[in-house]
Length: 369
Image 1: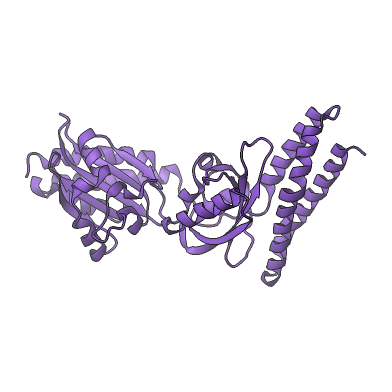
Image 2: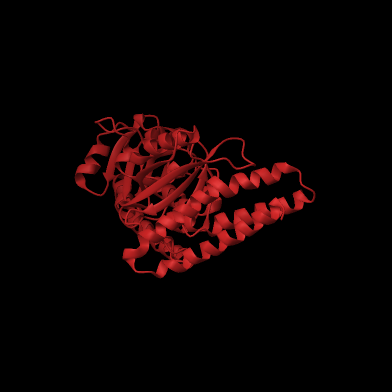
């Protein structure tokens, strides 16, 4: 039997074993660790045996090899996608190259969105440096690693990340295969989303935005000009954002109102100088809205009195920074909104609605000091 034929039989046996692992999810909870051990063993088998075997076949130059190799490569991709455990292939900088179906459900992040972005961007800020360091060590060939991390969408749930080196034939450098699992070792069902995934219809979200626009318009029509900015902050806080920060002025910004999860936390941000917040300064100068999901720069909103980045302290998962611009182009202030933890990120539709409300607020402020 040719090498290709033997490899095909081995892959077929592997696929059957994966099917048995999927069926084993229904075993009693006390037996799940055994199932998990078997799944990890199968992953090691792929990394240590099947993949090198495939590379040898690919470079052997056997007659009829190219067509068979393509088929085997497609089969390997299918096996990766159908593995019952959440698995990601990343490079030494933790940039995602592949994300299987189970991983998209586990993390709540679509594969198309995750590919090309650092996997650390989906982790809690406190875990990012450690994960990046361990991934680099594995990629350098210093051995497999395992550490506990937390997803930004579910910060209260510890996740065990197991890292092992892998060198795909079509990749220029050694990659890192990352297996994610909850700390209680339960295997997540691939058709049962874990975590707060978006489940609201576009119609519902649109209706909520229209209701917010109506409330904002009513509020701005019933307050004096000098109270317009403060009233807008109170309309937005809670129902639309976990944090709302208002800075008045343009050339010389001054912090006007801050509402957050607690008065103590709000007081910390209120004590900031807006001139030390790059996002706010850029919005005031450029007059353009900034929408960021999982902000990459922790210092984009400056630091608190202790020197800690505000975005990290507030556990910000998405933000909107909107200038209050009049129809003539004059900037009268900046509104910054944060969403934290498991709350859904700001959407493009919400950013557009916020841009409209910001123009209304600027008009309502008039020339008030």
